Amino acid sequence: MSLIRHESKGILSKVVEANGFVFTAGITPNNTNQDVTAQTREVTAEIDRLLALAGSNKSKIVSATIWVPDIRLRDKMNIAWNEWTGGQNLPGRACIEAKLADPAILVEIAVIATK
Amino acid sequence: MSLIRHESKGILSKVVEANGFVFTAGITPNNTNQDVTAQTREVTAEIDRLLALAGSNKSKIVSATIWVPDIRLRDKMNIAWNEWTGGQNLPGRACIEAKLADPAILVEIAVIATK
Amino acid sequence: MSLIRHESKGILSKVVEANGFVFTAGITPNNTNQDVTAQTREVTAEIDRLLALAGSNKSKIVSATIWVPDIRLRDKMNIAWNEWTGGQNLPGRACIEAKLADPAILVEIAVIATK
View: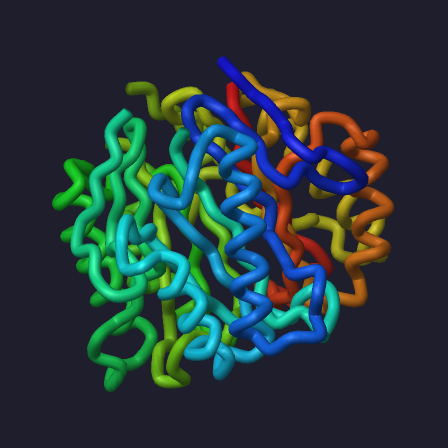
């Protein structure tokens, strides 16, 4: 069994490797002074960085959960989602509405990938 | 490592096989002109179909996440849930309220199963 | 393939072992006549008990999903979270707002751990 935690601090680890899988925390943007498309670009870039830390990458994502504070933001979030996936290696996905830690956060994404 | 994606199109894959597990997307009904019990029957039938595609079946589900747009729909959703499980091989489960992609969608379910 | 279900009854199993992982159901407190900090202490103690049943423990949690019915409860939930983790072996985590099965329930937590 391997269990490796990366960027572990405070309340969570940003990404954890375990048994051939990689689990990210729910990732939110640092710069919330942007629209949901730009926030999603920041979040997906951060997920790329975290997956690389754990020896994985976006082509190996099996499942993604996406939260938006208003479901009507979904279409503009999807613009950045589609740029990111390029329509390739698509994961299973659920996108639901939920209030997040700060009202200025317009998107949060958690993924499970293989190594 | 095996990673096989099924019914991959647009923004997501409907079901992904990886490392002995199977992950479905959040599955919603096509016919939203039904009550939540009937919508749940449609969703669980679709999950049966997707698990079969990936070499699994409902007896191997380990975890289910269920979203309903009004938590008071839970009891009527559970009627179809109980028909589906027959009280056998019960997964871990969380059922929470969340607005979904379309207000007419009364239930969304994502599952993780073994192969 | 191993798939072992514990405390399986009614609509769900409280914890399921599969392929070196352990999946809990979304765990809620029995005593809802307490504030969110105390409810979280009850939930994390129950998760400790369930992980032990499945041959795991809190040092092996890879991912946690936390739902609170009002996101402003997050800070008081985190008091109990931090007591529980002791800042060690931190999982990936997402904490989002969602109405839960009963308005008196102030926290629900589901985790994935390794064995």
